[in-house]
Image 1 (cartoon, rainbow, N blue to C red):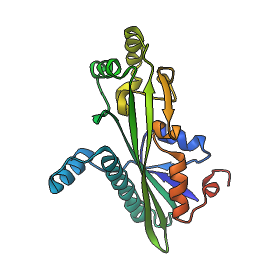
Image 2: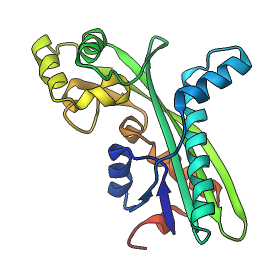
Image 3: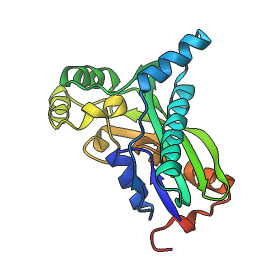
Length: 215
């Protein structure tokens, strides 16, 4: 069965490949800031992290699924969309983008625990039946070591790795040694919860082994 990842995230692509899936990739055409701003204005409230990531995951998957049904009518498989956000004490920590922000984040995070919220949307696209969707949010708590020194923070930030990831850290690469504990599905912190994706696929009538590249 074909799988299309509605993302150009290298981490999410690597995660699916490690799980035996060789997905196609397609970038969603979604203005994330505009989507959130529009919904928050309409509802007159600030979306909490779980609703924020789920909304964006669903919009991304829906955009790519619509494009596939238009451009590739024979597509028969799953479209997977995701979005992640990290928060400590209710404060949302997105991608830092600059070394200065990343450094400040790490100095504030050492010895503390935050929660990684990950939204998932899986759409079953069938040429004869159309599309149906299942969605969920997964969460994992992340505890950072307390003894990371300023020199280690500066060296890590200088690699550029933390600049374009939610929360300014990775668990599966250079940032891993500075993380003391993860509670929850570890793959959630990488970019998507594999156990959650399996459950959503099952809800849509798709058995996980049928997605393996070797099947």
